[in-house]
Image (tube, rainbow, N blue to C red):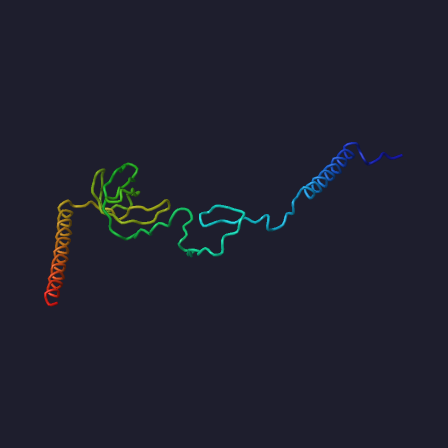
Length: 190
């Protein structure tokens, strides 16, 4: 005579499954009995113009302010693209001759850029003033076409920029004086 294929552990597992199914059905019936009408209206939530959540719908008579989707910024605002070919000026803050790399801190923005010996036009050392261009590398912007700034050349360039700025200011002042002169003549004619 053959033994029954139903072992004790199989019987116990079946009992547990049946008990779980009954418990689930009882909980479902209990939820139905205790619910006060789970309609869609009772589940809705409204958000006001300040971002507060409420269960009352917004007032239709209040004038709504239109917001354009492109004006909404989520997260960090977009960075403006850095012109990669613009000539820049900075100071070498670190340079290791034996390993062939270093960092340049740009004057004005105080941003640091990586520089490799392959991007140099002439030898540099720490605290040198340099002109450089930027190029996108694997880990960010790299300084390339790096060359030392001649101090006399820099002073001459700054003097030329200052003279151009002064000439522009003088032209603006002359234009304002002429406009004020014209307005006083118009007043005299009236």
